[in-house]
Image (cartoon, rainbow, N blue to C red; front, side):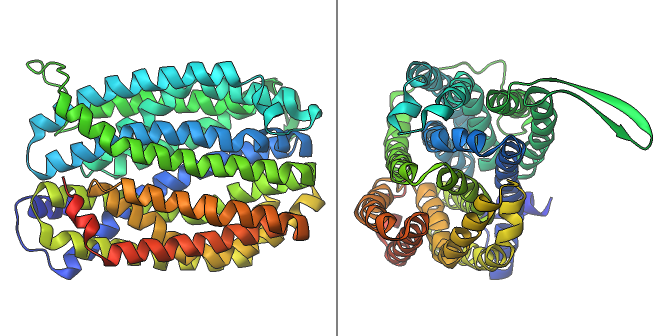
Amino acid sequence: METTKLLEKLRCGERLTLCEQLRLTVQLSIPAIFAQISSIVMQYIDASMVGHLGADSSAAIGVVATSTWLMGGLCAAAGTGFTVQVAQRIGARDDKGARGILRQGLVAVLFFSCVLMLIGILISAGLPVWLGADASICKDATGYFFVFACFLPALQLNSTAGGMIQCSGNMRLPSMLHIMMCFLDVIFNAVFIFPTRSFTMFGLHFTLYGAGLGVTGAALGTALAELVTAGLMLYFLLVRSPMLHLRKNERLQFQRDDLQLAVKIALPVGFEQTVMCGAQIMSTRIVAPLGTVAIAANSLSVTAESLCYMPGYGIGTAATTLIGQSIGAGRKDLTRRLGWLTTGLGMAVMTGSGILLFLAAPFMIGLLTPDAAIRALGTQILRIEAFAEPLYAASIVASGVFRGAGDTLVPSMMSFFCMWAVRIPLSAFLAGLYGLQGVWVAMCIELCVRGIIFLIRLKGRKWQRKMI
């Protein structure tokens, strides 16, 4: 209730004290952080369950992981073009206009995800080979990516519907649904990954039936959890949302200006996702010749580290909502202050998570695999990455600030420069000298450079001139 009242004060042009701004930022951030963490917990679940099948199974998922991130990132980018407009229309107290954007957005992103699904299905067989995977893991890698591609529309609708609910100021509901999705993921994975098995508990004998699909079962379990959650997310958006639920007297009408603006916002975000994931794919090619243990350690460590930077993405999501509604309400007095407030909060939180990552690295990687060689290598590279977390937070949250203002082109170019001019050349050079540790040193350096240049842009005023 307090969050709703504070957002209403913002939209009505009333003064918000610094304490109220901080409370609003924290109240919006905490549910968003839990939503982001829950998505990583799902990756932990998959990685941990599959990790117990052996290093080859972990490597099979690892070799296509960056490609799944690319597909998922493009879906998220498509939704961003509409969710930012929804936030700004709500900030301007134009709920009817926001619902018009919602209807156009859902149809447009569904079509986009279906096209992406077909592309994914077509390339699934050849992708592991192109990425340089060993022949022993290609079959599992293909099966995992194929199932992932088939369920891209569910991922798209889940992401976009959740984003629109969040932009209305309701961060709690998407968070709760994503936590529920984690529990569904555990149940579905237990059924699809492992074969039928028996065990005894408290003197009682139980039989747990399973499909025994291994790596492919992990993809199927996660996809079904995503599908169920997407259905619930759409129900709460289209039926239960006070601001955005569908009205009988309102019809779908495509507006050229709305669609053009969505493309203008989404294209740079999609470009940034392509750049980032394309660079990750290139990194995979750099890591692949280092062997199965290195591929598995790299993949599992990326999953482990994700738990530490997801709070930054949660705060970045809250920043997009705050900045978007502030701009829609014409509150230019608040945008700069909220931009720095959210970015500072993100840096503080991720400094703490970086310290935790350094101390708990052996435990975090140990949850994902019983293999001693993978654990030892994963611990080393996670401790390297811990030093980048504060400045990584700056780039994550500042990007959310810029996105809420409709400023997506320049930040995407900045990310392009950092990935392809710093990380990739440095990774290729250091991999030959220090192996996987060298690749992660290059990553750490690049994230620090990126954070610094994002802070420089936040300090300037050009991003505020992009306000829609």
